[in-house]
Length: 136
Image 1: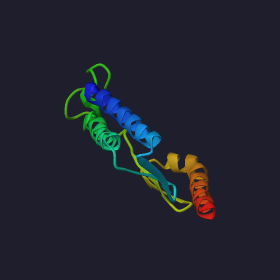
Image 2 (image 1 turned 90 degrees about the horizontal axis):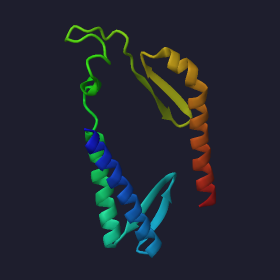
Image 3 (image 1 turned 30 degrees about the horizontal axis):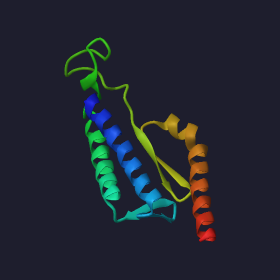
């Protein structure tokens, strides 16, 4: 699995380099759609770069095991067997709708600790969109 991740990272870097060569040669164009960079092109460098970037991202994602305990040795994890206790694990996340963060999941200390950081990130994103729209 580590080999797939390493090949994925190498292909992503190769793709970024190929697209950069295409941009420097003038056969591609870079646009900013709100805050998302969009690259269009019609050269072999651009085609190879986008293909390499796509395959690299897929290989990087496939390189991670579905069960995180798959790559562990028996002495690194909890007790062995199907009866091991998973009560210590929790999950959660945050969704930014505009500048408003919405927290979900079981990790309430996460929500309490990072509420203002998430709100600041949402406000900064909204401000960046307004700046880009004003400059356009």
